[in-house]
Image (cartoon, rainbow, N blue to C red; front, top):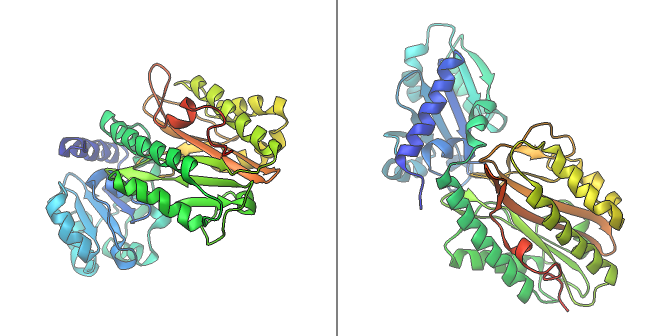
Length: 385
């Protein structure tokens, strides 16, 4: 279960066709270890070992074959595993970059930048020095237009990652104990996933008790207490493709109102997710969640957070969080082939707050959940008694 070289070459040619049609002389694609998607989409290689080893730079000049730059240690492995033949260490920019850009220097070339928002100033400066007189334009949209529609192979990898996450979350719901620390919960999740042959797509989020009032949190040595919400947002990856599923577990001794709120959340997602289909507006996901929550008195616990950038979800793929985002301000229509994390966050409840998150694939016929646990289990399966 892998992305084939043939598919990687098709992606590259699709990108090159877009480059030609829009009049660019070259595309410069940057990503790093933590936000690897743009470059990994072309190379199927994900660097490891942060800082100087983190960059992955792909350069496409005209009809020439692409060139990949990586940290020196990563370059050794990539030379053996990447379908692209020209793989170099990134440590010789003033020798390599003028050579690569030579066919388009000396004229007013147009360069499309993909990943400019995370590209280090030093690397940008080295590229600009190699292309005096060039015009640089930020064009993430060129890559995102390709990445937002997933192939069958991509979805198959994501479904396996979702199966692993479902197993992790189910085990956590059954084995979490009062007195465990947030860090230990993260370790429990990661241990199960590793045993099932998954990588970790991004940092494991565990929040307990008062920490569940925050929309994001790094796990600490705080010990879980009776009656607390424990939010577990976990992101395994298979073949570099991620899942972003999550549940909130309610520990023994909770207030009945906490259980009511959590059960309502599960019922809400079970009603809204089947309504997803191609052609509906992304905004309608927010509207439908709010419609289901209002009769239960939870609209004020939902609306302030769902108006944020990723209020009710986002796309998922090579990165755990990809554009487009889903919120009350989303103004695009869903398309078949999109893979989306649909999340329900409620905050300022009795005892804190919670998150439930499910990844789905939009199909020609409607929607196919990749995470199945939350939709298949009873509404109170995450309540310990």
